[in-house]
Length: 384
Image (cartoon, rainbow, N blue to C red; front, side, top):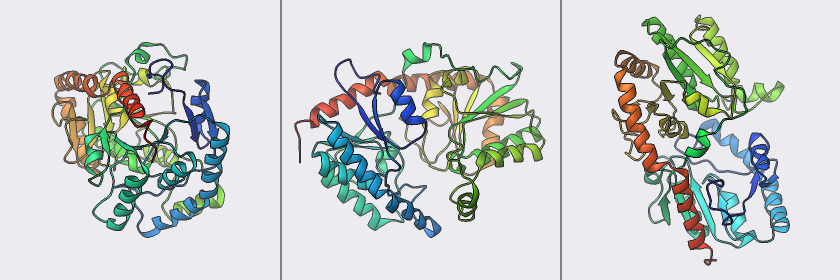
């Protein structure tokens, strides 16, 4: 989005945690400040606090000081800030602190479906904070917007993908260069951080079922573990089911089921375009009841998707037209959808063409960046 803003309209500054993200932004000459952590409060449909998950709040309390310190440093270092953009609604405390410290218009992005049925007092708290401290709220699609409380200053602006960037050649090693894959095989991929909520275990189980059904295909798992854990910390997190070494788990499952020639692993890569241009189907079997970014990115390469979602809205996926929707946490349903495309390869082309048209309509980053810029300009004179 930053690249898509017209020249000389936005000067971006970023506060973020350590990892790949700050390196990527700094390589684009974007002023970046790293902090140990950013305090959050998770009221998403998937991650809302219950049972042992309440212990996660201990980590968030620990991050209060780094969050406050980073915002104060940013206020002193970056003198001319006109708008503050909080990039996810789970950052409830940063919303409050940023408004108080910068005293500038505040834009809040909501990227995940929120929990409303089982967390009424928390939902009310989030609504009150958003109502009082935010000037405008951006939901990434209609499904996310539907999960938010009513009465908020809300607009839907979809994520985006750069058509121009898609056509450029990356200097990264081509992810498929080491594989000798027959053109006769159905090529299926799951892309993203290796995390149970992304449905990666169901993906491997579906691969096993497809092999048993004698479906001639190859499966690609593309991504890396969400975090690196070792020693006592790894032991405690596993016992509480807060984290796993998912990559190792998946590789062991593949080995035990003799799937090495059927399931392939590719580490995190920036050359994602080459992935989409060499697969037939994308799978997004997450537990989030949402349509993730890989779905519309693949659509720009005319690749249809299989998505775990119920009651989807048509701005992201149309069941049976731009892809196939299945129940979450259901490897059999995922295998059935893969078999459907395998038996009817003409549907890959038909749904891929329709997915491309939907992506052009809703996910062109040039159009959506212009909408965000319009919001910045509309709230800039407004200081509560």
